[in-house]
Length: 81
Image (cartoon, one colour):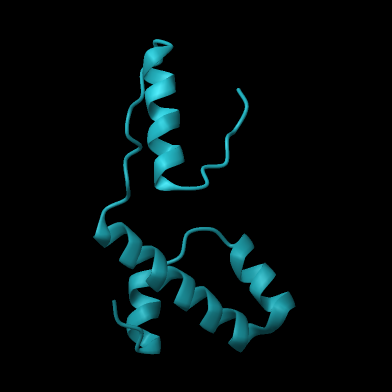
């Protein structure tokens, strides 16, 4: 399936109608919840802070260790949602 770059709202609806006319079934893509996005933002902030403190080599070792408790680390670093 080829990807089409949508250039405008008009182009989007024209393409949507073309797909419907050809018999395609178009379903909306589910968006992540706000809580999930906030958690991702918090996790990225914690990872950035750990990278700064441990350096590049230490950060790679830390990443290889497995499961992290991001809630605890965020509280320890004072990172809020």
